[in-house]
Image (cartoon, rainbow, N blue to C red; front, side, top):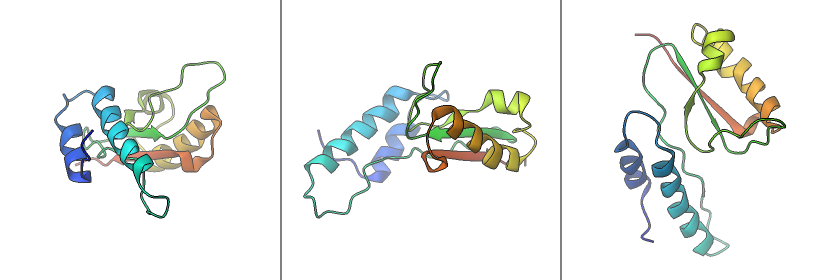
Length: 127
């Protein structure tokens, strides 16, 4: 597998359709992971590729988890931005950046049984 630069990974991810394409994002992750595993132990490499943040629509809330172990439900896809439609509908995450960025981050960390550092949040401000 040929090494991809961060820019190539980004272009690869952005070439996917408008809806999230988990396969493309995970293929990029897999290629980066292989390169990291083959690198000397002294190399300071970050082995996790984070896709670009979604830019639309205004007033939308997204989450990205790097680990998730929910007790009763299937875990969401990891290392990909997912729109928080539940939080937008029931937790004010569409109207409030604080509700999205702070409240929902706490909710997802608790639900996934992980520290908040394993959950990234993104809020798209209105135009």
